[in-house]
Length: 240
Ligand SMILES: Cc1cc2nc3c(=O)[nH]c(=O)nc-3n(C[C@H](O)[C@H](O)[C@H](O)COP(=O)(O)O)c2cc1C
Image 1 (cartoon, rainbow, N blue to C red):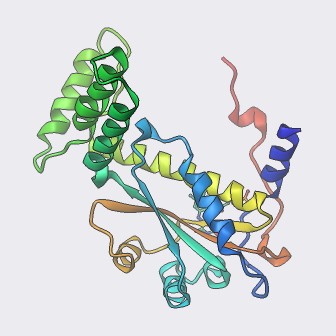
Image 2 (cartoon, rainbow, N blue to C red; image 1 turned 90 degrees about the horizontal axis):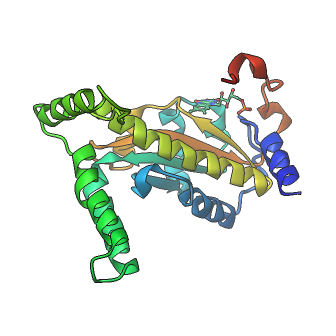
């Protein structure tokens, strides 16, 4: 039963590029979908993401050229920008640390110690950077040496950090889109946008990055550009 409903949602979610101008998307649909998106799995529960719900008509209009005049942006009833915030790692690590302190006994126990080490020591080790790349070099060396004899997580440079935050943010975007489908509406994820201008429009600092922009509305038949082609299962799934 649950699986059937889920299959229905998966089948329903298509990228739709032309939304019906006469059918608005209630704010509650977006709010519920964002609440669900926030429950997505994310690396170390660091939640290095933000979601900018473009609410005003003026701002939505401003976003049309920023999304390269794509029809999904032109006809969107609602627009949400998914943003990565790698730069907030200190704040989020401290936030997690607080939650651990609240939820574990004050006297030192195993979980408190583990959590404190994780967010107090490991996260700074993974996310801290310096202008000369010395920390990256240190992490690369550590990965190399430690990885010689046994499996070791290869996480060293800025690109590893960026990949991690974008992975988590994209999972939130997927939860959001599935939720929109479950609510009876359609969406279109967009990576066709001007990163610099979108950041400027949202007043974001240099450490933030745009993951994707999602247009939402009541989809139309015209908005579906064709059948759903996928490379065959056998070509992409391997059993070992
Ligand atoms: C990260 C990402 C970026 C995308 N960017 C765009 C885009 O800028 N414009 C667009 O029309 N579709 C965009 N798409 C939608 C894809 O083209 C679409 O998901 C794909 O063709 C599969 O079709 P389906 O979503 O209907 O299953 C994007 C999808 C993803 C996941």
